[in-house]
Structures are given as structure tokens and as C-alpha cells.
Length: 465
Ligand SMILES: *Cc1c(COP(=O)(O)O)cnc(C)c1O
Image (cartoon, rainbow, N blue to C red; front, side, top):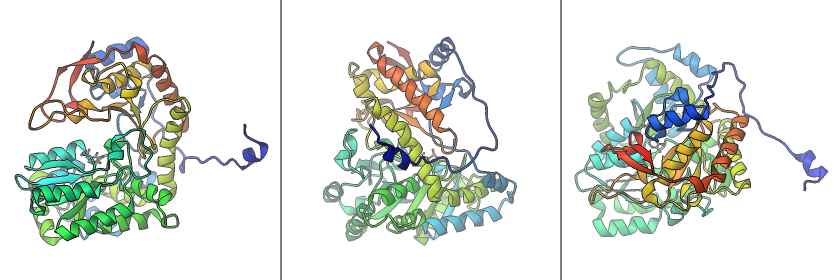
């Protein structure tokens, strides 16, 4: 029980913005949703967004832009070459991330394609702190083999390590011993590891990693997509960083790396865009040559001038403490509601999403009948809330043996778009998850009836068992 004194001390936080324009939501009936999900092959990626009530499929490109960013759209300089918006963007990337050279790309995977092609040769190994779907695929397509070097704690959804995204230096050293440093062009490190549940990397870890790699002449490249969220956790949890700004932490972290790729659709509060930035001039020459083949001229890289402007402004908003705090705390608010009801989720609560532990919730279902895929479908049928699978379907098949990869984590991701939904929406989501959780014993699982060759989770189709 709270005493009066504690109640008087209570201080709520609120979103650091007010609403100027609204987008009405569509409500559907349960029979309509049953029909929609069957037509979508029980894959939430194949639903029409018009049939969705609260869309937590992804936080990628789904952010609400600010009035300043919309104003930026009107400042588009659509010159083919040398657009003023490019120079604005370049300046912001230099200022906040510290890299010397930058090429824009249409989105994150465009940048991953370029860096993988520029640096990886056939037979190389690329260690990383847990895979990300598109990152690993581009490394493999370039002839490389991805090796997971994240700490073991990251694979345990109940382990509450504060920096579950950390690299295990012993695993890196063992890989160097096994294949030789000349077979490892770079280590790819992601800030807040999406697939581990949005878990951060500590500054101490990246610093030690840099030292180890320097001894062997191995480069370090950063997936900076969610690095601002990572900086928030460093400020919150790491000794010595409480009084540092988000921008200072971001810059210090990047300083330990040789370059970064970015999906601006995440941290940077835009609907489309990305970039690749490096310090090494020879690498820059390679990527600016590749960008004209695959993306567009090196001063637009697949983006309209206006989009580069919205992105440049988004960077300056994304590093504001009030913004990033509200972003992470909203996710935590939802997670804490679920924990209050003892619903199994990945802990600690990450920065961008709540991950339901489908193996624990559907403990009666084997992984081969796709528990997380089923749970996402049931949640949609119950309430019109769209989530996504992050488990056996997303993990795909082993490139050598062709067998399903069986990830230890079988999760449903409820991803919160930035600045889009309110705390009341979070209440509704929590209640819907509770409803599905209470009916968990009725679930029977799915069978896959169509499987695409690449990134199968996007387009695979299922039927109820
Ligand atoms: C989204 C994402 C990517 C890929 O970016 P796209 O813009 O979707 O192509 C790469 N890495 C991480 C960590 C991501 O979250």
C-alpha cells in the first residue's frame, strides 16, 4: 500500500509534444478479422493495414514526423546532383556520429548491401552481436559467413543483464584463432540488438572490443540504426555517463568504430531513408562508386531531396533527451503492465518493443508448429492489434544444410512506433495480450504452406492445424 507521502511525491511523465493532426483508426469485428487473417495466410505481414486497429508490426518508417520535419519537406532541393539537402544531411551525420564521409541510401539494407560488397570477400567471416535478418543476408550474399559472438545471456529471455547486447570477447578471440584475422574483414556491432529484445551494448564493451580488434588489424563497423536508444541505456545504466548528454554518448561510441550504416526509418523519425558513413577514404571511394550502381548518385542515394531534409532535421530531434526518454519509457510502461500480470516477456524491457516469450506462453506447442507465428495471429484475431513473429520463421534455414534454424528465442514483437500512439493505446494493447494469454491452452499451432527463398517471414503463408 502506498502512503500519502509517497502519493504526493508521485510525478507522471507525458509525451513531450502535443497533437496537431489526427489519423482516425478503423475498428473491425472478430468475424472480419478471422477472415482477414485467413486470407493473409496467418502472416501479419500480409494483412492490409486498413484491417488493423493498432499497428505494432514494426517501428520502421512508421514514426510521426514533427511539424519541423514536414516544413523540411517543403525545402526539398530536387537537383539531380549536389542538392543542398544532401549537404545538410552530411553535416548532421558528421556532427552527431562523427564520421568523415557519408553516402545516402534508400534505407538501411541499401547501406548494408554497399558495405558488405565493399569489404567482404568469398570465404570471409563476419562476427556480430546476434544476427539481424537483412544484415546477415547481405553478408552471406557477398560471400561471407556470419558468426554470432554475443554474450550467452542474450539468448536467455529471463536473464536481466543490463547490457545483453554486449560482445563476448572470448568468442571473438576464439574465432580469430580458428580462422585467422585475415579472414575477418570487420566485426559488425549493432547498437541495441533488435533480435535479442532491444538490448544495449555498453561503452566499456565497445572500448575493449576496439582494443582487441586493433591488435589483429580487424575493423569495427556499427549498425547505428538504434544507437540513440542504446545511448539512452548507457546514460541510465553505465557508471560515469549519468551526466553526459545523449549526443556526447553517441559520439563517443561511434568514435570506437570505423564507420556505420543506418536505417533512418528507426531512430531518425522519418518514413524512408538511410546512410552509410565511414572514416577511411579508400572505403569511401569504393562505396561512392557502388552507390551509383545500386542506389542513385552519391548525393541522393535513392532519396528525394525533401526526404534528406526531413532526415537531417530528424537526427537533431532524435538525440534530444526528452524525446528519447519518452520513447523508451512508453515501451517500458507497456512492458510493466504485462509483467504485473505475470505474462512472460523478454527482460530487461528493451528500447523499441515488447517481446512476448511464445515458447513460455504456448509451452504445449513444439517450435516446429510456429508458436510465435500463431500467437501473433491470435492477437490480431482478438483485437486487431498487429505484431510480428521473431522466431523460427524469421531465423530461416541454414545456408549449408537447408534445415530450419532453431533459435533459442521464439518471440512475438510488439513494436512501438515513435510519437504515434498514446498511453491509452498501450493500456488497450496490454489488455488484449492478457486476453490471448488467458486462452493460451486453446492454441493449436500452424503449418507452413508457402515458403519463399529469402527472408521468408515477410511472405510465408500458413494454415491452422
Ligand atoms: C531495420 C533494420 C535494418 C534494415 O534497415 P531497412 O531500413 O529496413 O532496410 C538493419 N539493422 C537493424 C538493426 C534494423 O533494425
